[in-house]
Length: 148
Ligand code: RB5
Image (cartoon, rainbow, N blue to C red; front, top):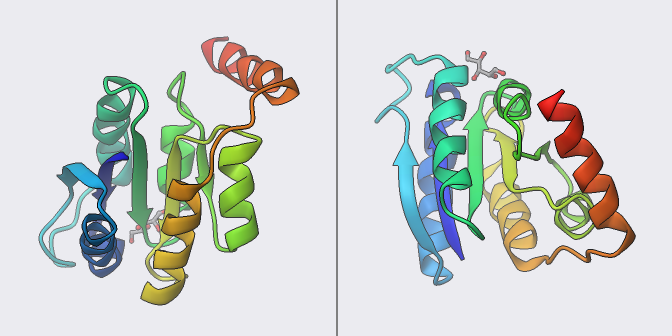
């Protein structure tokens, strides 16, 4: 799987750990956006917009966005047509967000989840597959709503 990863200053250790984990599992981390450490304050909408452009330009790829809570990144990402970003903190929902909602961006909170749970959430998200069928119609409805 190709993955594009970004964070703001609120989740640098989580971003770095998940990049390392994803590479260790054999995935290709194509993009890593965000500050080198927590002192490099950036605005999460800017990172989300840049990251989502990478995801949309790379069919089949997935995105990972981390901030303090994951919420700001998800709110920004879901403004962009074609992006379905899910803030996750349990493994069942990480699987279902892909299987039923065709989520293409995982949002995690670096001040919410620890590194172990973060790895489990990313692994579940990357391993799951969209089931299509009746879910495809609903996902198309979401995209139509984003386009207005
Ligand atoms: C930054 O302090 C923090 O507001 C941001 O990382 C995120 O939690 C916003 O949703």
